[in-house]
Length: 198
Image 1 (cartoon, rainbow, N blue to C red):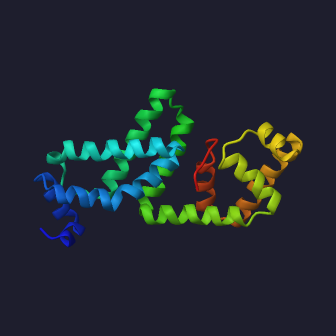
Image 2: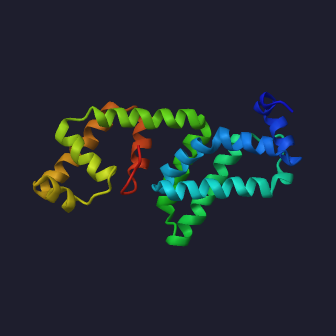
Image 3: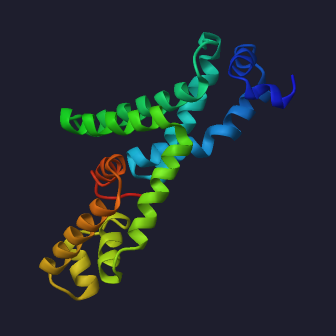
């Protein structure tokens, strides 16, 4: 089968079910990076994200004979990544219902809009962060991207903790005003954890 034929969902799944290694390679080449971006948005750790995606591809190959041609392979992969994340999360701590609702919402955004839209949302948020006032942006990135505590930021910048808190609050206020409603929810989900990767 030609590589171009793998673009068709049913033919790709049929080829995978038949043990076609070229189809499997195509699947990995097409979705590996996109799935890593999604996994990283959930777990906030690039190495754990890569492990999750690797586990997903292994499971797909091991269970390939059970794949259904009428199921979209892309949605199926994203769902598997999400399930892997939940399993990992449960191993480390209890999954509180409120936190689960955050991740369910994030998962629904990706399922609804596909990976390209998900990446666009990331880009929009990142661009708005770059447009923040200099000091405000510096504090916000140290907190939300580098994962530093308010005390660590205060020591690093030689400012008071209250100044750090004020700059973070200011950053959120500016971002909320500049982002559309749906992206504001996305922003909240991204910063629900201490560290992000944008």
